[in-house]
Length: 533
Image (cartoon, rainbow, N blue to C red; front, top):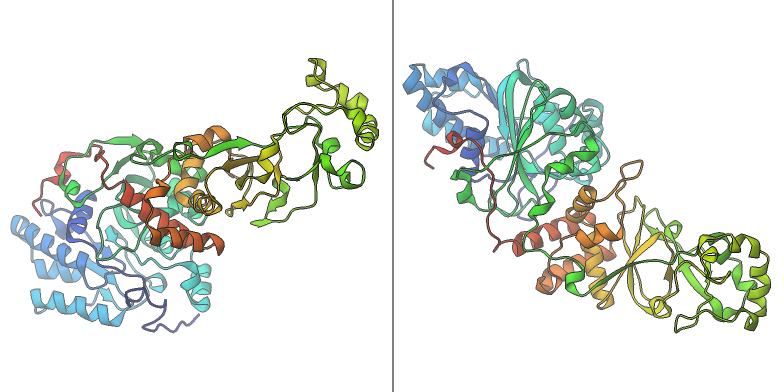
């Protein structure tokens, strides 16, 4: 379909720039080219290289520099190889012109025949590439015009759910990767964890090999802060099922340090890729209980159909009834209480009531006496109308975060003191309603969900489970050290269900609170870091 490309195709970033592009640090550029093996000690005249969104030419200029260095050793015509073997694409006319002018200042007779001014995702290429490198645009699904989105959906198999545009850059590049080629991108690592990256993960697991995954969260890799979770990946083809080398880097200077290596096998199941990230490295962060909160689980009755239903209000004494919330009330990211009550046979001090003092409740329960007596707790000596768990009278009036054991919801709700939780609801109490809403926002973030995905069991469909033992293991930022600006941002995002804002804000908070942590690195071959920058 014909598509009209304009200078404002994807809208503007906060700094006024368009197309989701940012300048990449020169040290990161050098690191990436070294990492994928595009080094001047090789005869670079033998390789084609592509930069699919070259902006003002950060990668192109270093590629040209390396070709010149290689030509000295291998005695080839550098200008001819730069013109014939360096390919690129840039949609923004202004940036395209700046890049070409930069190159022409170095190579006056340069021909830009292989550098296209168009949308890379809609471009066609007649050759494959030995090396592909770059920093693809970071553009959210909702910022892609509908007509462009339709064109992308028709072309790319990885266009899934509400994927960001960089996912499509991966696919288009990988489809043009030579059989022994290497592909290196710096971008958000969300595709490794999120639903929208599922089809890209499947593609890589099936047809390619993820050689390196380097987490650079907290590093100043760009000219502005744009990614909450940046990572560098190196992918090669074809698939040979070799382990992935992983590392975490916290400062730019660490890019030139020897790093210790950790090998991890890429899971064939695309739902398990988050295992590539080590949960144990959550230094300088805290558990929920460390911060004064209490984690609990709702009441188990041993006979829910008898003790919990919406008809009890007309059958038993009012002072025995507590409004109860269960996981069925928390679906489709909505809190929709269906009117169920819990018949509470306990006094405020935790002792069992005398059922004879409550004739309506006695008459109701005696209909089910044989069934109730057949429960394990009764056979062990408990009264026939006891519950498995005693009811904590004070709990209903406490504000609490409600965490359904199994839920596809991203939204977490804070009960302001109106409901008692059922046994399929975990809860967190402590602090003010504002503190709980702040904590709920953090728990809704991808940062926490990736931890849950690593340490909890999953049900069919890949949904992580909120369970007490898992919740207690989570590491989160210290709430008392969150700035007032970030606190307001999180609370506003929570009330308006702005998940992208939550993810970005939590990422920034985590990076800030980890800033004073000891650097933990893992070894790569030292030869990758021999160049002086």
